[in-house]
Structure formats: structure tokens, C-alpha cells
Image (cartoon, helix red, strand yellow):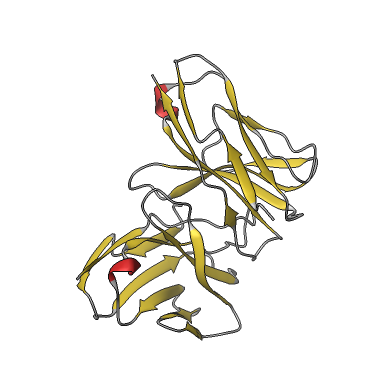
Length: 113
Length: 112
């Protein structure tokens, strides 16, 4: 969507490294910030989400951080593994309009063994 | 629960033909939506529904129609297929705004 930008578009790391993907959105009233993972040929699946009253959330090797003032949130993956290779999408719910998530264009993460 | 079920999984059409992509969910979700996915473009919203009897347009609605006569079903109709509609189509449902989206397996559609 035009109000959501995701960087980088491609990220290549060595197994065991950390990976960070950033999502910038335009709507200061957004209140729900999810990340989805899509493996090749599969459906997107939610991996982690955060709501506007929380700054950081962790689930094992993945975490999401939110900076509402700067209007961005980031996905952090530590100790990357080859099975983390996929396309990752941020999909904030923007307050004006559809109430349906607006997806970024995706980040292709490649983890080299 | 089966979750979100899409049919067919693959379809090839000729330009000008019409068809309906089916989507059904068994989670009693109010929100349902259709996306198309093209390389490098992410998922773009075509149409969505926030409840039975209510539909609205998304980012790329032209050439598509939807209806929501029941909570479970949300079919997407291509009125007159064009090569530009070659894409992978995903249906999704959620309990409401600000809730996780549950996706179907997708329909890969080719228009010749």
C-alpha cells in the first residue's frame, strides 16, 4: 500500500546472524502492527504482532519493536536459521478507511547456511 | 476447523471469460477480504467485507465483484478476464479490525 513502506526489499545474512526489517507507516492513529511470513508457494502467516500500548514484544527468536512517535515498527530475528528464509510483510491497520491491514511490499530474507 | 478454504487452486482462462473464485471460512469471522499478489507488489486489497451484507472496495477493485450473503462465504467474481488479472489471489478472514488475518492457500490464475 502507498502509505506503508518496508525496508530493505532484500536481506541476505549468514546463519546465526541477526536480521532487522523496518516498516514505516503514515497514519499516526494506527493501533495494530503485525508481521507476516510467507514461505515460497505458501500462504502468509502471522508470526508476531504488537498493539499501540506496548513498545516491544518478544517470542523466542523474534521480536517486534514499535516507535509510534516516529511511525515505524521493526521485526528483529536473532540467531537466524535457513528455515527463516521467506518473504516478510508488515501490515499495519491504518485508522482511515477499510480497517483492513495495508501490506508493505515485502522483504525477501535469505539465510545462507 | 478447516480455516479458510479457497477453490480452485489453479485456473487458466481465456481473455473475456468470466469466473468465480470461491472462499469459505468456518471460524465465524466477521471480516473477510480478497487480495491479489504480484511479484514485488506485496498483497493488494481488492474488496473486503466487515459483515454479511456489507462489502466495500479496496485498493484495486476494477474488474472484480464480490457479495457477502452469509458470514461463511465471500466469492470473488471476474467479470471479463484480462491478462492483467493474471495473479495469485488470496482470501483472508479475521475476527475484526486489529485482529490477525487468516489466509487461504491461494488461487493461481492465468489469463491467456
